[in-house]
Image 1 (spheres, rainbow, N blue to C red):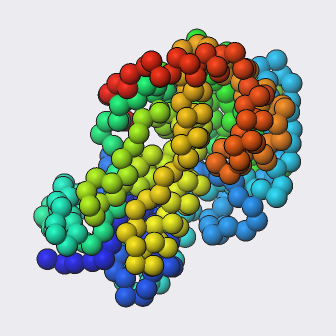
Image 2: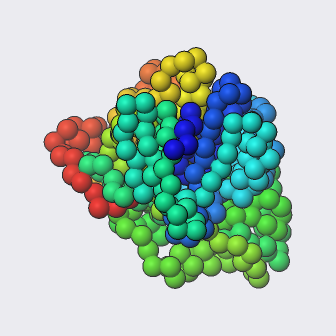
Length: 395
């Protein structure tokens, strides 16, 4: 049976990022096996990931575009603009990220990648055993000191509140020059709002004529496919005034927004990483930046001879605030569009982004909280302890 130091299951953002950090930080003798699912339903679809950071970043070679200016539109049409320097809001497409990793990872002599479907992981005295079926149908086993599993969960942990962030987006080219390529439309609330949750548009412009435009809802259930299309058509034609446009590509997704407690360790030598390990910020759905912080910490721990357990993805304070927000939104106490409009119109956007990264102090968090609807937030805070955690069938 082949033995490696590290086995990583899944070649999405979390798996590739961890492999990259390990190959850069670990000793050249470290053996890393990345197991990617064969083409099909088990392999994640193409994705666009966004995050923010100050200055040059580790993955700038894969960045499609970055911006220093953001805009939010209220439901009534008021525009709130801000510059987030020294931060940059960055966009990476999964295909570009994979191409960068395909050039970078093979430079490490101990790195190998293999296609296969992992059927089970067994605990062992010296680590773990990974049992997989290869793309040609053969069964194989692999012994590893440490295993990192990024596969999506089959069901979510028990939670008091679970909403879904579901979206459908079009990469479009318009006949009219309707976009400002220097500015991201982070949230545009000029659309009818659902009874429970919120809805908005999100636009990442790459030129005056091209952009990724997404329709997003936070709500208990997804929509029919044609409903996303109707919302996008109305926004692009009526709100943006684009006239004729061509759809070049599409992307869709569903992200659980939950106050569930995700287990980061499933066995002594087996860890869950990425969204499966709770890396997604419950109140926003952003995941990529958290993955980078976690994978960097894990690689450094392994290089120092410590157990490479994923650190807590979000602070207890951040998780508590997110739980209150989700409870208020799910039960109709908070008007989601008003909530975000108030925040982005009264607080510097760079400060809000640092808050979302958990990079603010308690006093700074309290100052931000004073700009939210105080009454509904207090009622949600008081009611939250009375709600039981219940299993969710969704993942």
